[in-house]
Picture 1 (cartoon, rainbow, N blue to C red):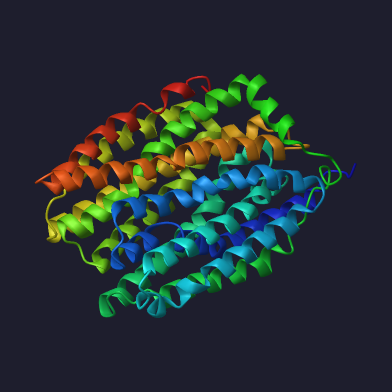
Picture 2 (cartoon, rainbow, N blue to C red):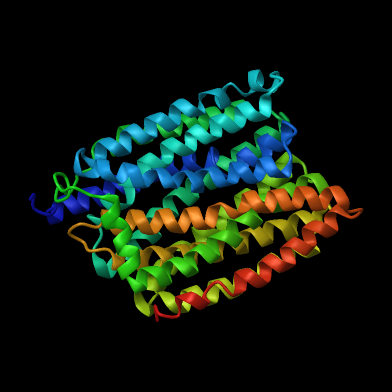
Length: 409
């Protein structure tokens, strides 16, 4: 069994992780979150297609379970790089977006490309968090993730400011924006290829049966999953359909909608480091409770957005700022709990199983929400009223998401 990383290797791992993460997360977000929603709407996709694309990055996390077996045979660094390379390959058709627009089956082709990106990213993510666990000290988890996530929030603010200006001058021209995201993904490979790795698990057989036994016998893991899934199920059902409502029913332009993305990442940038310090100081549960209740109120405020004027744009930007500022706090507390539950000498089993179940369970509901909205919109005379009713229900459910997490006081 290989020894754990030395203090200098852990420090080098932290530096390389922080340096690579802005490029990696820019690629990740550009091909999984707001921009794909806008591109699909531009191509004429319906709510069901938007919900399906939103669920790709979460649903394909199931692939991490079979990939988990490879951790005992191959270095995690190699899995990380190969997954990123597969995601880059899947993204190539979107870089050629003008050609995609001319295709009769543009929406299915775009969905296939987004799906392959999600597959590659999930293969890569199987190794990413277990590698990070080897670099971070137990009493500094929140602060480390505060620094790590601040960098990529700043990078995405700069990206979306540029994207907003570009689409304002060139409506519907998504190709160069996807190209820039693709180049960031290629840069990430060059940086993560130098990450040090703790080799304790390299020749250890990791069986899926052992991973599932964790869930059966680990009561704290079950409690964590109940709250984490509840939070993600509501959150990722609200975000894409808020963007669809703003464009289709309220009348926002692409550039105006991207201003909400700038506000979104600004909310994370200005708060995530503070959340990290507060989590380390006060523990996870107070953060879970405050952020879930606050996000319920913020989601309810979407009901008031019904006009595309200056007040509507400012209101929408404020909602997205607050929504992600609070979600960042929940996310840091979520990661701290998961990392503390994982044994530091061999963390992969618990971290991968926890992440897979949390993200798949929380990420598939957007598909069902999209189907329900499609049906309700077809029958209703007030399309905006359908969205407002959905957000009112979602606000209540989001506010209650902290209840299963009371164990982590």
